[in-house]
Image 1 (cartoon, rainbow, N blue to C red):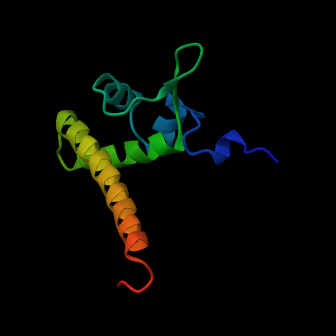
Image 2 (image 1 turned 135 degrees about the vertical axis):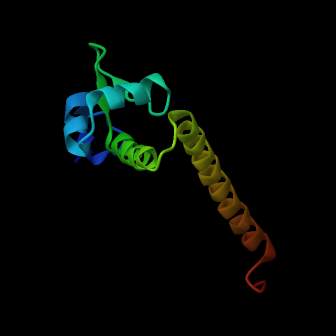
Amino acid sequence: MPDLPFDDEHAPLYSLGQVAEMLQVQQAFLRRLDQHDVIRPSRSSGGQRRYSRRDIIVVQHVTRMTQEGMTLIAIRRILELEREVAVLRRELKEARARLREQAGPDAR
């Protein structure tokens, strides 16, 4: 059976209004996040913002940071750094796995 769109955390299924209601934030706040390149939701064929489950998780994270007094510029940079750290961790894990394979079964 094929995967359904709601099975994909990156499927853009939710409108601006739905996300604002879900997270109890103003629609203007979500638009501002987009304008400041903090989060870039997909667009429908009519140009309306469409958010994925993954986008919603990021908006929740951003909302917490704004409540702690961080600016959108600082938050954008934090998100960039978090993505870089995730990539580096994945690369490190892969490098360690290659080293274990090269060392053979006797190495620990």
